[in-house]
Length: 105
Image (cartoon, rainbow, N blue to C red):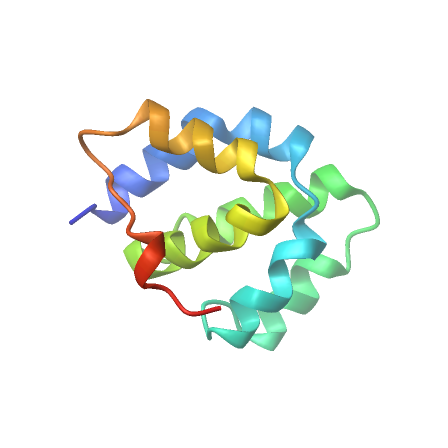
């Protein structure tokens, strides 16, 4: 099990890449549907006009959510930004394993 502290460090380590490469608006609907994010959090993120600012706000919120939220985020990355998911997994194979095969979309 990955702790919130570990997840926060993982996000911090990849923050620059995520901010530059991820269109947060593509992953938000899944996270709201899975109750990872509230409608209020979605609005808070979406209300920013700049994609990098949206990504920063998103990561700040996500880093406080825990393992289930990170799991759902990674499943969302599988469709929206698989290169970011690959980066997480290659960097953390012994510490942070995600079973994407068991997830229903």
